[in-house]
Length: 440
Ligand SMILES: Cc1cc2nc3c(=O)[nH]c(=O)nc-3n(C[C@H](O)[C@H](O)[C@H](O)COP(=O)(O)O)c2cc1C
Image 1: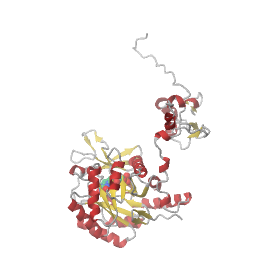
Image 2: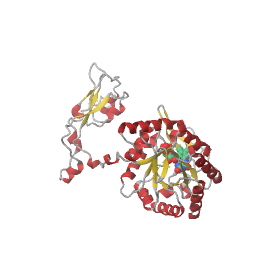
Image 3: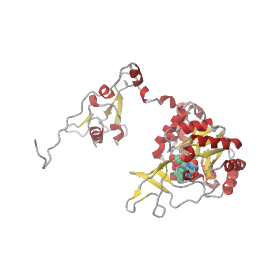
Image 4: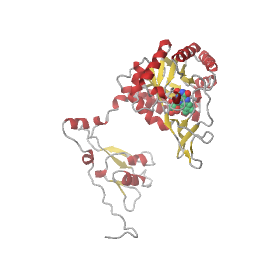
């Protein structure tokens, strides 16, 4: 049976599922309720000099039937008194000694950092997370992502924390940066024990077009917020992978961003995360989602023969290559299962207008056909097809050849992938004569 016991840089928990620092970890009440439901750890809502928050605070991107596919917030750190939070940390640790309680921290000066580290550790926190990621409000005061965007400042503050910390220090990174590995390396070199990513992405989710104000509206005005939820998972996965494969990032990773179910968590773990953190999904569905997450991860590990999480961490990383190392000889084409096809012809429209004119219509039938010589195997038709497994990609090369762009250019043979891959030519388009246009 799979063992979900987790150890991230010395912070241990019964499973890798932690609540991210956010509204679900605002109080001891919530964290104890979450631990009872099955969560393995929690990163407390960021502690610092308490702030005053605004109303309203959240905006969302709804996509078709999916509500809150992306969530935007302009909330700052905790607005509760520090002493109340510290008292509750102590209480949680008393009832749940085996669960991970991590104090997220954000202050300004060296003295403040020293004091808050000592306060959090005295209260019983198992570890510290330095919030260098918040991209709104606090960064305008020189904290949060303003630190995460300046590697030397980040390194200096990690150093201040390490001067007094006796528990592991996780450095939480901002995705609002060109190259995530720069602050990740700085965190590692500065003495951080782990990194966590991603915090939220600067965003506006929309505009009230009647009143000319973006959301969320605060008395007729707005400000940019931080974006999270399912929409950011692809960005988070890429950044986690970039850190995991960077040789100078020598510390473990806690993966955050768009995790809603066990599969999302497995993806983060396979790309290098040793624990995962969840915020938006809990704000949407509550703590109960943990049951499916734990059961799903256990079943996956059993099926794959993984006994411990360590066996899984980063397993997909070696399979992520730079583009130039992909096999140009690998060739797939689309295949339509006529029995499953509902005849919507969306694949035809997408391919003809938006891709490579490799799908044709057949007289007397609603089922389109693949024109193999034009098909470059781009996947678009299978992605737009509304029927699961109706359009699949089938392999056409025999697997005997492996040639990369890097190898070809090294051999002095500059390939033209367009001509190499495409058998057919583009169709000849003859516009309909338009009313009023002079004919030659
Ligand atoms: C309303 C809200 C408040 C947040 N507050 C904090 C915070 O105080 N400290 C922090 O480090 N991250 C904060 N975050 C960011 C989350 O911890 C997390 O990094 C981000 O939401 C991505 O995870 P998700 O896609 O699971 O939501 C907040 C997120 C939201 C939505």
